[in-house]
Image (cartoon, rainbow, N blue to C red; front, side, top):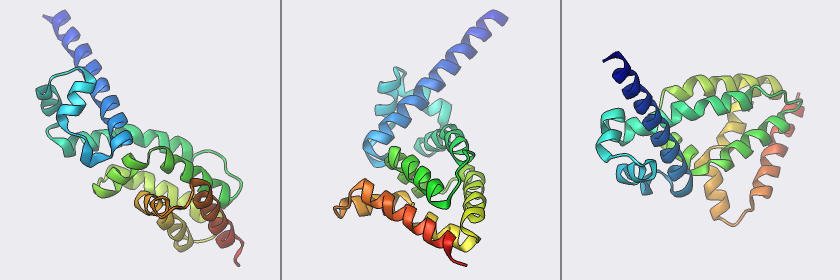
Length: 174
């Protein structure tokens, strides 16, 4: 029985990893609204019931995806950036690489992001000189804002350049 339980746990861990990987990729590709539990289950190679049993509902699945991907930003935020512009550019790249997922996270008020957000605010505040200035830069780095600018015809390079310029300008003010 003990060996059988161990196999079930290994299967459960494999299924969980497959479900989270599939959900993350589908959300990145399509956006949260265009992804269903059926889509995730099919992409993960599991039954829909497995997804529901493991995560409860779509909101629970999104929360798990957020929890799973939060570690990547902690690694990015801890990189040594010499300037506010370098940090803002790195954050822009991170947001752009996963834009639909970032927008999904922004639309679902998830507490797991608060700690990561505070790390980001604190790090950026040190580089720009105040918490208010840090929030000013972060406001233009919201996924929905970046998507809006791209939809208006701006290129990613133009938006990135503007974000870096804003951060460096705020850091230079005395």
